[in-house]
Length: 220
Image 1 (tube, one colour):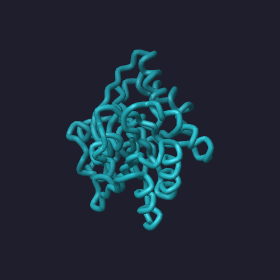
Image 2 (image 1 turned 90 degrees about the vertical axis):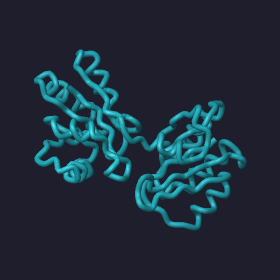
Image 3 (image 1 turned 135 degrees about the vertical axis):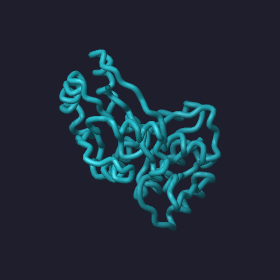
Image 4 (image 1 turned 45 degrees about the horizontal axis):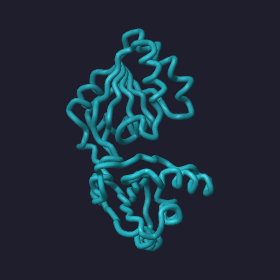
């Protein structure tokens, strides 16, 4: 059985009781970063669990091995560093292989940075689209943003702190100066912060402050 397990996006206490139960009973944990997952397992007092690295660069060559383990009757949990797996993380190819081979799998729902940011943002939540991470090259970034200009509702993007000012400028270029933006930082943690307003105003805020980590940006 394959379990797709959602994990906390910041505060480790946000782990669900069902996720704890599953992580405690599986034979193997597939982890984006074994150090991050080990920290979570230690917090949950789950000791001695086998962790296998599973990230984008090795996903294709690992899938056959994982499917073989599932055929052998192993129970396996797939986790990402934070939040719900498969959202800008590997895993969907493995799910497709499980469906093809008729291997049983399920999802253990839980935290999601996308949903958390939407609710925090104060922007419309009835309709939204998830863009994820943008390409690294400037022209490609703007091109991708413009692909969604005719899509109604709020848009959600993940971005690192070092590129947040650049992203806000690109959003203004693609959507105009009257675009409303909400930048969510350190969600669920002690110093959680949300900066909201027109895109140019929010850009000025981040021009004058030093931030770290990954941010979730909602705009409309």
